[in-house]
Image 1 (cartoon, rainbow, N blue to C red):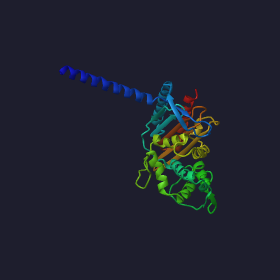
Image 2: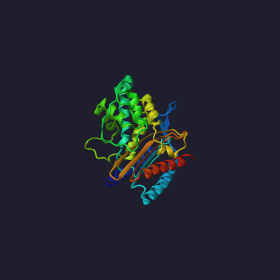
Image 3: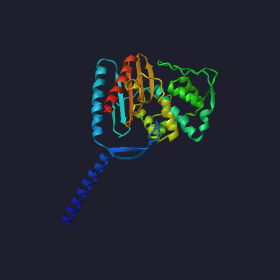
Image 4: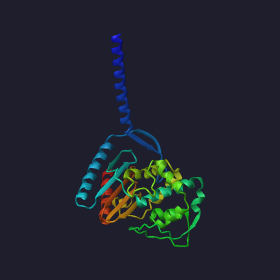
Amino acid sequence: MKSKLVILTLFLVFFLIGFVVGDKSFSEQSEDLLEMRETGYKYISPLLDCQIKDSSQQKQTVLLKNKLEEYITTQKEKQNATHVSVYFRDLANGPWMGIDEKELFTPASLLKIPIMMAVLKTAEKDPTILSQTIISRFIDDGVVQDVVPSKHLIEGQKYTIFELLERMIVYSDNQAKNLLLTNMTQESINRIYTDLGLDVPGVFTPDDFMTVKGYASFFRILYNASYLNKEMSNKALELLSKAEFAKGLTAGVPKDIVVAHKFGERTHGPEKQLHDCGIIYFPHRSYILCVMTRGDRWENLTSIIRTVSRIVYDEVEP
């Protein structure tokens, strides 16, 4: 009887060991997937399938992280910034890298992307809403823009919903955003956040509530066309590719490289925050890069974002 009990015990032990090892192997393999994507679109790349990917890509990501950490440490020592968070994701092969990616920042104008997505989500069912017009009027939201849009709405003039989307994204015009919000329900905007598992900004939300990794998810789902349909995802990224802010991510790559991105800036007393997040359409290897910064001088923060973008591009280029 005892011998049978011993045999049964050994059997269970070996079974559990095999289960754990097998589960670990599955877990490791699941992290090494090569994404297969649909072609034929300019700004999106819908996900079709996954395969095991080359581990050498992971090594490159580690080298990139080391270079960025060294640069960021130097900038902090020089007091050019108090915080710098970076999120990078290779959209061709999937590996990602984060530096202080859990640090909370004020997204500011970055929140114009979920507003755009909420409008386009509604337009999937009724595309005619994009041609509906709104008469421009000044709405004081109490927000002062340090990076002033180069174009402004003319009070009393009619603008289509799509024209307001364009002004809001391309020129980061707060008045265009405010007019759009008068024609939207808060529920339609909140749904974008809840569907992505992100905190919904509101009256009781602290100023610093979004991470660089969390914000990058907006670009991932647009690129994958996994939330908006293909037409609307492509339309959203096309608008973002025309953004006029050119001192951050776009300044770190050659002029012929398309960058679909959005910047955000906010001042809290002596502290300033400047962020730039987007997709860099490197040939055959597009990637997401988001940089969020905190410091006391705009020029220093701008320089840091530009340099981080250049370091990443130089690492991806080979």
